[in-house]
Length: 202
Image (cartoon, rainbow, N blue to C red):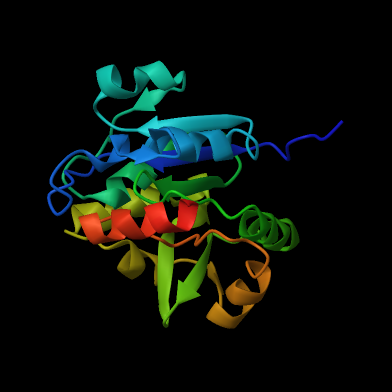
C-alpha cells in the first residue's frame, strides 16, 4: 500500500483576481474549479489540507478547514502566517489557488532537504528570484512574520532574507521536474495565462 508522507499543505485563496476579471479560483480546470484541481493533488501528498481564506461559505464545500488571516492587510504573507498558526508542528507546504500544478517530484526533494537540516523554509528559484508559493515554511517563523508585519513588511521575498531558507537553484529544479508535463510555477493572473493552461491540459 502506498502511504502519504504526511504533513500539512495550505492553499492561499485570498486574492481579488483583479487582472483576471473574475474569481480565478473557480475557473474551470479539467472539469473542476482550479482550487479543487489543486486540492486533489495535495490530498495525495499530505495528510491535511487547509484553505486560507475569509470566504468559508465559498470554499467549505471542498471539505477542508477554511482558515482566515490572523494579520489582515499584508497579502500572501498573512496567509502563510495563518497556515503556520493552524498547521501542525512540522513545516507546512504553501501554494496558491492560481497555481494549478503541484510538482510531486519537487515536493519530495524539498522534504528530503528538510529531513537533512531543519531549515526555516525551502523554496525554489526561477530567473534568480525565489518562488515563495510552492515552498515549505516552518511554524517557528510565525513570531518573525508578526514582527516583520509590525514594522510594515509585506514582501515574502524580503522576509525570507532574514531566515535560514534553503534555495533550490533553477538548474536543479529543471532537472527534478524534467519528467513532469506540468509547470509548477505557472501562475494564472490573466486570461492569456488561463488560455495557456488550457493548452497545457489539452
